[in-house]
Image 1 (tube, helix red, strand yellow):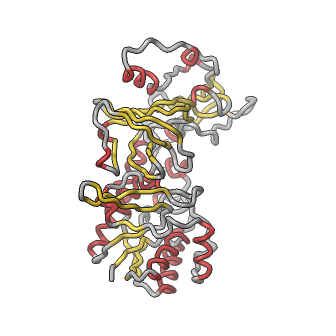
Image 2: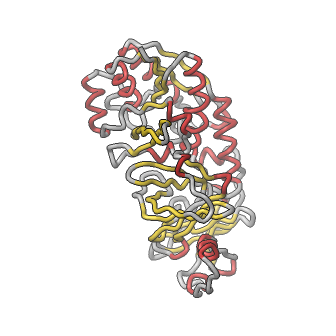
Image 3: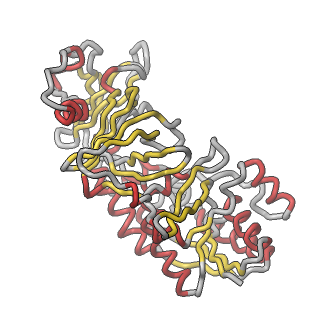
Length: 395
């Protein structure tokens, strides 16, 4: 009988994951990961992780499976939280959920599971795992979930073959309503529980308040850039080759205060991210203002009016070699090679047609249509036919 360790989070998805595995005849163990207990950076007095671990325990009792809480807060702080503060202070926008899966759930947590003699680790992600024998060896595939509204493959875009071997995603074939239905039938306490928002495992923490605890407020100005700014309208030079063209279009616009007009003040450029609209508190414009660039050195936020502002859009991005990751190692591109893919630069974004170009220093991703708010520090993930092949950090 194969043993599976399930990361029980106290939510409906992981509860149903454990229930289904038990029905399929696995020996199931439930573990709740406690990733946060630093009271210096909590906002409210509610303690969500206690409530969640209680729900997880009640589900485990109902299913008749062993349950324990593992404290991973030290590793979480080192690998996720410190990294987040560092990225934000540099004016980049990290994705803690992607990192949490790579560094915590499928690394630290997986090690604990294997010490418990587990054959597999299962999570409640909406994605599927495939397998194919290529050149006599099994190759594992990460496929999108059946529920298009909930496909969570993007969050797992940094997993490796070694991690996929041991991973199971039992609810990947289901839709969210089906999962809730199964939870109701199985009389699980989490059946009606709302999906958690907020940082992976920190609970109900809202990002700006979270950042304010570590990154000191610093007043600066908000500048709005007109839509006919000369960098937007100048014509492109003649390019010697494709790489020169890609490099030109991957370079972001650069702004100075004098390029626009000062319309307000903010409390720190490092709290803002490209494409953001909330929190600017500037009135008197026809259309809402969007952040088109943040300058953390000069502490200036540059904005543009309306969501179609030219400053928000680019169609090429670059990923350095160090930050390029292939789940399908067998498909890794060599210098000079290209690949047609579908790509996304954030979770829930519809896939968009793009071409990968491998060069000496890294990888260019050229989209057919311009993308809004390409943000350094975020992950770009590329797919063909539902399969996530690889990903990288936008530089």
